[in-house]
Length: 311
Length: 324
Image (cartoon, rainbow over the protein chains, first blue to last red):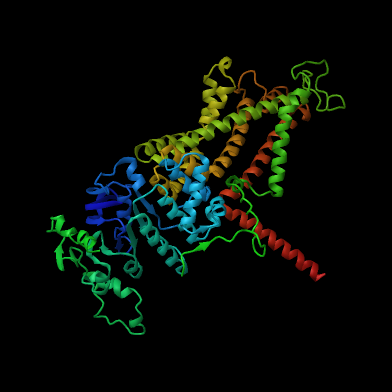
């Protein structure tokens, strides 16, 4: 039962263009909460800062400003090696996230041993097989001895999920976990994650560009555009009643059976060049927030805790 | 759609009770090159020469023993004849081979360790360490090798110029190119997601380097080691031929040096200079052939080219046969 609260998270990269230096703000004052058994979806196009947020939350990179506070159920803050144990991640590319040199067993056993979840070879092996069975990789002893190149994309992603859960994580960050998989097995992996979330009381951050799965698998959606949250609210509200131009554009891009065969008129689609990311529509407040003037973070994040309370 | 997906047990189709699945080949198997005629030839040459260098000195007589029969051509008693001072060339060859292999192996290990440290560690840590190591590597890269080796060897007095001095000098001038290749490879490997995943699991830096990154660089390291051995044997031969080798050592280079000083060529004593020359050439050939096979692991495209060529040949042969 671990929760994360993200406050005004900002990340700037310094770019060198010849002799000049320029800073690129990849993530700009993003705030949200992750609560146990709840899923928050981050939706946005490539380069909108989704993966940067994942890196900041897993502490693979340090934020320029803002804070990520992780706390256990009793309110104890999570720091140091405990952080590595509590916050885990499933990567986008299952072909790159497993070391081709090592067996599946190595990948799952290392986090177990590092966080002293098991001791001794026998107990570790039993635990590895148990973990593999939990992600529906059977027969577990056969899979454990395999190396990544002998598995399919979906099987690899299951191994990655088993590895992420091995330390006993409370927070799972899934960075486009199914975008590299065949369409036919995506749902299987997402259902598996949803089941594990229920069983382990996980707080999940689901990063995706697919609005349909975001609506299906998450409680809260944050739409990210050029580093800023431009729309936030309960999943259904954001998808069915988009307010921000960018969200409308995303919704139009998703295939809709009712629109099938009809031509989207030029007027209905918002003009891309005119999209403004300085304002954010909050469905919880039912109002527009100006990101630059709303220094008050409490107003920005008001939605999430209330949504949790309502659930 | 269910979220159940199982791996079909190997060989279980049709069998009522699936037999315990055979454990797949361990990881190191993928690191071994495919056996090809080239690799077989290379291995035979290298192993043959190594065996000669290891066992040969035990079987032959004293290489320095002087007889009163100088410049004897090969005969039934003295298989490779004698030198000007009546020393047995075969005995000298056996000891010289051992000496050359010793220095080659020593330099190979030293150069590989140096290049691995500067190439891999710098690239993994990044930042100032990477910049400093890169600068150092580049400096060593542009230093002309043989002239520096000659200067250093000439500078160290002959009495204190031992095997280790020569080995260190050769290693210092030959690690830089490998380090650059390793740095490039490491930069590519360290940005892969499995490295990020192992950091995320809480692995320590040294373990990330040794357990996650290094195994993926092993074929490159092996190829560089073999290349360093070739370069060292040739470099040492060159130095010794110039009279700048380790003092009191017997290598293929010193044999050539004495043959040259003893006017072996003008006197037509081919049995004196041809065997050591040939042995250097054969060792170089053998190691290169082994290296080509290792290259196929690093770059599987090469393997595909070879397989494709073979398939084309087989097809052409079959077509010819049918034509007849």
